[in-house]
Amino acid sequence: MSLFKYLPKKYLDTFFRHGSLKIGTLYEYRKVEHYGEVIGDKDEGLHRTTLSHPGGILVDLATNTPEANFIRKTLPPHLQDAKNKIYIENGAGIISESNSQNLYIYSMSSECSNELMKAFGCDACMEIVNPQAFFSAISNRIQLRGKIDSYGA
Image (cartoon, rainbow, N blue to C red; front, side):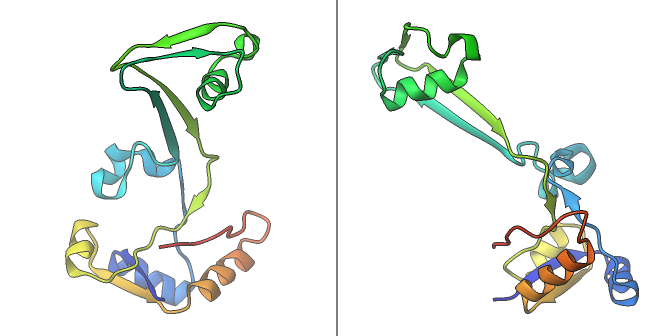
């Protein structure tokens, strides 16, 4: 399956002439004020889990229920073993946020579209016909600075 990289033509030319490309970081893509809302995502790499229960729920932290385990993970270490009971009222919830580590990203698309190219503010699209080989070549080039962990569409 091919992948597609939208970019300004000047960077496409630089890639083919000099083999250079820009690899961003996960946290860098959070800069919506810099990249705009099409490329930027203030929640990039952020995972939110919410615990709520219609009608409310009483959670006994001394138990081994999924709710008690979830709440203990959200508490500071000195309170995780506390034998407290927490009541979550109807309509209320507990939100847990976790950050991914800051990873390198080479953002691509699984589709080639003039509309997407324009939305990204680009005037060129590069097709990667063998993504595995492409990312292996990048990994080999940046050997000690990082490696490709996976890719997906």
